[in-house]
Length: 289
Image 1 (tube, rainbow, N blue to C red):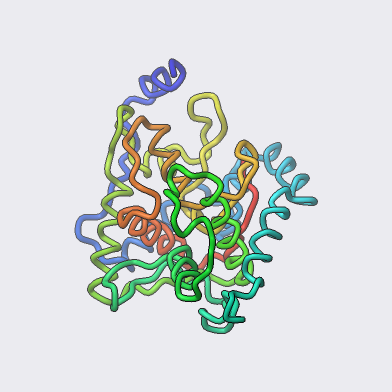
Image 2 (cartoon, rainbow, N blue to C red):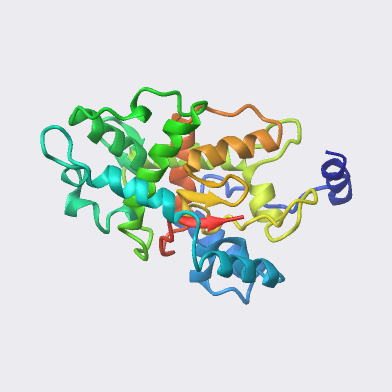
């Protein structure tokens, strides 16, 4: 804790990263990606899908990452997710029956704005609705996903397999409708808003401090490419987790009140973040430090 506050004192005022006033999503996207091109000019665009390992000075971390990707620990959880995906419901259908193209090569469009519900829909939401529609008996349907690790990990494993069916597909998020733009703006606001005892915004860590070792733990990842790997397995967790759980831990680290897993604001944040990574290839599920 002392290291964190000392580091903050040395930093003083953070770099002047702030959202463009009333900019449209396309302009935001251009400026956001240009920021990282200028900050890390030697990093090829597609490499941002691989996390902080691609940033300058991360050679040792990258070597370690490549080694544990030879036999990635996440394979066990991914196999569980595949089994859930392929196990027939009582009516004989499987999860594939709920999705276009049997769920293949569609995850690059998630999250998306749904006119019917007037909300952002995530892959987890569609998977859960599919399970309910087919009267499945799965623990994540009734659990408190913020508190109950087992059911949440089960959902993360299923979602990880769903995303694995679209690996390599380039992110393409539709923000053309008024509802989508409104949700995008809510997510954008949350991204740039300072909160918690440390008075940090998402942007402070993952734009201003991207590639730097904050608090003596490990280097921070760049915001560009944030969502391409999730669901992901972090070494310190030893399990596949959802991106909303990562949001919850981020808020905890800056001493801020976390929102609920699956909350509307986290859905909007994921929508904004994913749009900012437009054009990058999906790598989920992936290993991360």
